[in-house]
Length: 419
Image (cartoon, rainbow, N blue to C red; front, top):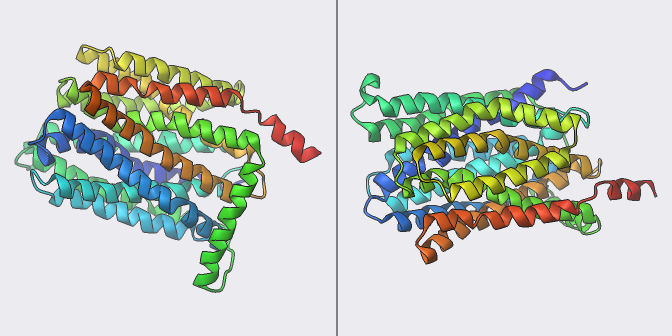
């Protein structure tokens, strides 16, 4: 039986770094970028700048993740790499407070580095899932992490929203100063609640004598993973499906507030809608994963994908601000579920002796996916000059992902293993 302390310590890292995903990535940075860092640019241009910034950071992570993941697996460096990239994200989050008005180039640079720290640390965080779970409870543990992420990110975000709405209560001069202090609070929150995973989660120790051997072993493990994936069609199909539909999910997370601003909605309403996602997402994720345990994980993934198709369609048609709140509620009901079940569904398919290697590639594709969606939104926005058309373009990612998922047959792997 897995150590419950380790399980909750692992899940607490999601509580810790989700503050960045909520307050910075999805919440205040898009708002502040348009109104402060890139105030002189028109709405379409700033949307493109933000979209390309998200794609650039994801592309850099794509280049780093496979090799670093393989090295970490082979030399038991997952916790060290997690700490290294978490520290980068924490430092850059605080540094956003130092960027001045109109300095959009510096803001983009700092934001890209912060994203690299956030996404890369998640690679090694996910890689520790098997250290704190087993085949029977992996759905629950995976869902617990995402659920606590919603709750933790929501708690700090609620405080940050209060700061921005009433800066004088906190002794601040204006909303701009409150937003900058919010970026600092994210860094402190992330640093504090990261401590449990470092103290209470253990990873299996593998001794490799030299740095050169560690590096070469990383290449060998990466090559080994690729060879295994090529020979296992269900895993390859699932990874391709995941690559597409999770790209749609990530794009909505990153671009929703920017889209609301492009439609002319007030920033306060957009932030409150995002806060709604956090607190509804906490119980919704636990319920979603529980239904999957009682029914079927793959079928619940289809429920989530179909829900997102409806969400994208509705998003392209909304007119009133209350529509945006309805949109946020719908996203909250399925977002955590599709993330948690994708991770646990994949974990059930991979060979028991190669979990770490296969999860490294899973995270590689997850980060690579985050390149296409924001770039797609940016390009469509520039050519169509319509934010509605650009958000609707995300639907193609869910359609293609759903089609590929339909052809995934995990039983084919089990049949092969028994031959």
